[in-house]
Amino acid sequence: MSTAGELTVLGIETSCDETAAAVVVREGAGRGRIVSNVVRAQWEQHRPFGGVVPELAARAHVECLDEIVGQALADAGVALGDVDGIAVTAGPGLIGGLMVGVITAETLAMVTRKPLVAVNHLEAHALTVGLTDGVAPPYLLLLVSGGHTQLLAVKDVGTYVRLGSTIDDALGEAFDKTAKLLGLGAPGGPAVERAAAAGQIGRFDLPRPMFNRPEPNFSFSGLKNAIRLAAVAAAPLSEQDIADLSADFQAAVAASVENRVERSFHLSEAALGYGAPRRLVVAGGVAANQALRAGLERLAARCGYTLHVPPVALCGDNGAMIAWAGAERLARGWVTPPGFVARARWPLDAAAAAVLGAGRLGAKA
Ligand code: KG4
Ligand code: ZN
Image 1 (cartoon, protein in one colour):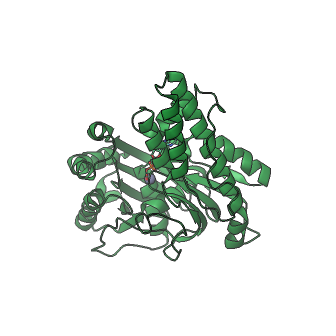
Image 2 (image 1 turned 180 degrees about the vertical axis):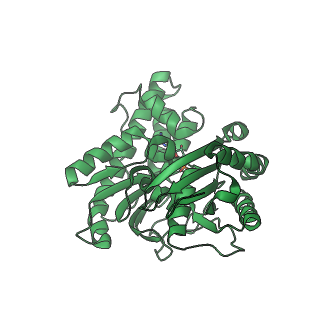
Image 3 (image 1 turned 120 degrees about the horizontal axis):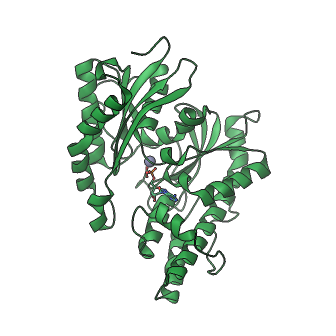
């Protein structure tokens, strides 16, 4: 049982291809502590298909979620009846998996009479630095994952202003497609990063998408095409060709992202207030990329910002970030009423207009 002012929260995550559960404690002063964190990836089930198959993902969540939740509670040494709340990813993501998580969490909340908190997966990524580094809003956030690439002014828990967004592919998607093209397998981001380590930057002339465009938006589909053409021209590809292509792809991505982030600084300052601390937070699966981190570290130092990135293990999807976002909401008395329906699409800034030039308006949160 939690001591005075503390909240112990169980978090459940099933929005994509990781089944995850964790127990997190939020101390009275707002600091967080991970007590357990269990993540089971489904790569083996999806590998033969070259990508995540939604129906297989949902079935895999059904098969192991009870076990993963049980493991998280056992690792924490906490009984279900002793938690202060149950948090669950309720969107955005693959609807089948989300429904598995939400129905499970609602049932657990009902039988234990504990409060349920429906968590936006993007908010959980956005707030992870609060758990890992004690960094609370306001800050500028670069959110880079498999389905999303956005710049957001995080004014407070629950208050987000979108400053920029991708107009086509998400950055993680670009990494995954590049890995597939180069025969590097899945998950693509780490595979490209590993290959790039043995590569030489500068052999292939790849574009820096959106460079110096005034609005801090992103685009990766042109780069994807350029790397495809470069790979076709260099075929058959040797190990060194693959390493060099990976290194140039990563360098192009890092240069483009740094430029886009730099272009967002004045918008962020206007949104957060000119006296707000100059803090840049990076979150989501792609935040694990060391080349991107290093580039953003240099940019931050040059522009008087501090950079905050969660440890690599908490950049990808996990239950601890869901539990933490749930605890932050619970601490404010924000509880979800029964009957909440999972949402495949759930933007953090619902008021933001569609980005001009986006080829798939409304397709992604
Ligand atoms: O946040 P996340 O785990 O899931 C989503 O919510 O989408 O992000 C997954 C994405 C994948 O596209 C994966 O390839 C990418 O993050 N990723 C990376 C790295 N680790 C994971 N991309 C680049 N470098 C990495 N080290
Ligand atoms: Zn994610």
